Length: 444
Image (cartoon, rainbow, N blue to C red; front, side, top):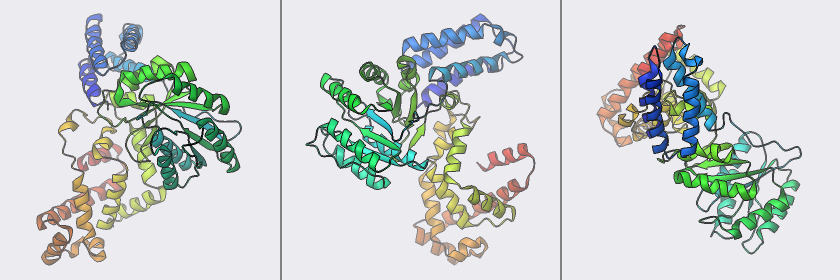
């Protein structure tokens, strides 16, 4: 989402990065470019004005002028103020003194409320919680069925509501059942409209009055830009929101909603969705998003992705195999499949500090190549995957036919595997972190 904004901001800040001295003129020129980049990203103009005023005041102060690296200090200020604009720190669901923690999901029709309920349920289940779902949207066709299907997929309980029921009665009965099930979390999927209307708000106000939820999360479609900010303010005026969940953060919108909604509503962005899968939900960390926007990468998010994919036991086993130079094609295929679970290669590489995000536009990350490699390795026998030295001409021809590829593709894979195996063996032995990083970059 932030690719265009990131490219323009990093380009603007690159001009001051190595400067040994900053004055009022070059600070003003840089901030003018930053202003244009933010406005083009559809950030609210009042938010931009306040942001620039704060950055300029700090940049002209002793904090920058007395620094040995004023350019770097200036970028640090921009990073800090960008983080503050989006809320400063991650805010989780508010704990409840007496379970269950009841969360009411509100928003316009099509914003992604129902799928977000499923994603939040999975998020809480992974933490060891017991979620319970209540479908209270009796207007949208198949809305109740959709949530019940998600519940079955997640293997979590869901109240069996009917379209003939009153939404308030559904929620009250569902909450009673959730308590009987000793649920830790209850998520209520409410109805939406194409735009805010009095009938919708009255119904939501009645649900709130009868249930008194711990959280009221506004689900906003990040693709709608500034309109999402205006709608959020309308919902907040009537319901007093506790937070925001932004959907479609993986889209190609300009990002103005994510940068403006916290500053305008004063409500924290608690979660974002980054895809269609149930796993594609992340807690919103303003400091990490700011670092991504400024091209500084996001190692913490990358580490969390790796930890969610690789167990400590598996990592230790793989490290030992690398040190003994026993890494096989079977292991290579397992690593590729695990990497695929982390997301696209483009998204993963963007999280690495120092990577030029603008250059990634021209990078050839053909995800289908991973499928082709998987097919080639899967067409080998167990002995061939365990010992690549067994490969001869007839075996390579058989593997190519079995995988629907050419012999040249098989040859290329085996050559790259041997090179990578040698490199990874060296990497596992080196005690020099700098040398290890250089070798890792060569592999990438």
